Image 1 (cartoon, rainbow, N blue to C red):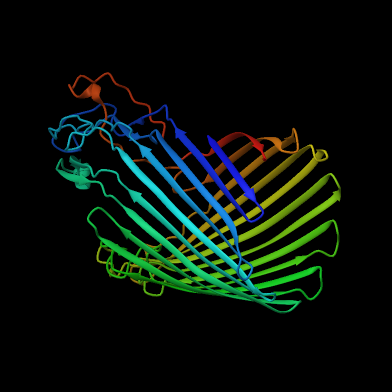
Image 2 (spheres, rainbow, N blue to C red; image 1 turned 30 degrees about the horizontal axis):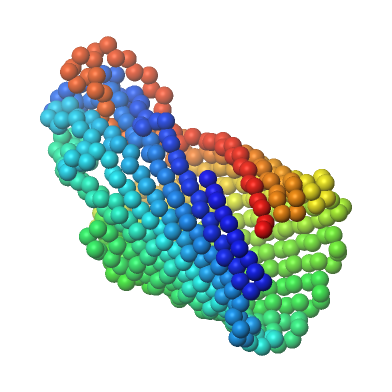
Length: 507
């Protein structure tokens, strides 16, 4: 549900929006039959303490409320304008915990509460964001931009502790239990930067800028660490003739990690999570836009980026991205506008995987993965009744391919590294949106969108998920008549249908 209102004057404007999202799930959990045991059996180990069914929770009921306030205004100095926005989102979820179905032979009792007796998470989180943008043109050939953005994820969910948690070894050969405690993760992100633009002559425009990004992360134990990234950008726009625009942009960035919280303790020193680790980034973007014809406009773009995680001995060490595309716009008639675009993307990444828990095993190997995407889109805007009724039609399809090749870094251990089968996926979207202007100020818009996703993935298609302990009917031992049929469990392909309607009135 959405609501919005706006008040505007030539020198200033203010806008308020509210959005509510409410999700309800008819299913609390999913259960499936165990292919290894048709009946539940009691015993002192999993060899004799098998269960006939497994269970996994479904996405819980939840709701979100978002409030947005934006504004802009003109200042009397140096042709300066300022704009800002503030947003506050409340995320809530309080689904009842599932019963922990005790494993036969453990002596655990069935319950759906934590150690404090609470039977639901009482999950509460808030998103706070704000930004301000200041633009100025002190001289006809000089422009300046200063911006700042703040984002905070506030996690106020209570900490829950559960004592009756089976250890991984308990699931395999014993029935020992441990305590498990949830964490209260939170983070803050801040961005600040400025840009200066100069047009020395009409055909050439130069731009330079600097940006600083700071992350601060922590949890309920007040363990915290931060990352700082500094980036510099330079761009050149060239317009040798009125119908040709060329733009080249270069970006260089360095990110540093403060603290060892991002290190994976199970994999050894210098094995950091990729979004925390030190990184050096180089990126180049190219744009060519032509408009020699009044009704036909082609454009071409190209981008290349290389991320080097220079202080990571394991995990993601290099990431290379390349993209190229073409876009065509054509207006053969006054009432018809057509557009088409094609984009090719390629992502190459290199990972070093340690073979042992210390991170320095002789069984280390290197994995190189390549992700390729081909995206095609076509759109049409038809003015059925000029200035009264128009229809927007669109279709897009993306073909994705992933290949993974592995190489053992120690010649004496060749069994650990193998190439994997190709992963293929297809995403298709179709949309139709119609807009009707009842009056000059009142309009109604309605639309329909269809999305379909298909994937062939060797990782998931033959997946055999963990079979948790579940079968309350067998706790008394009277379950010899249960017969099980195994249907498998995979991440399915999907289809989605979306309907929308908007009523807009301009005062």
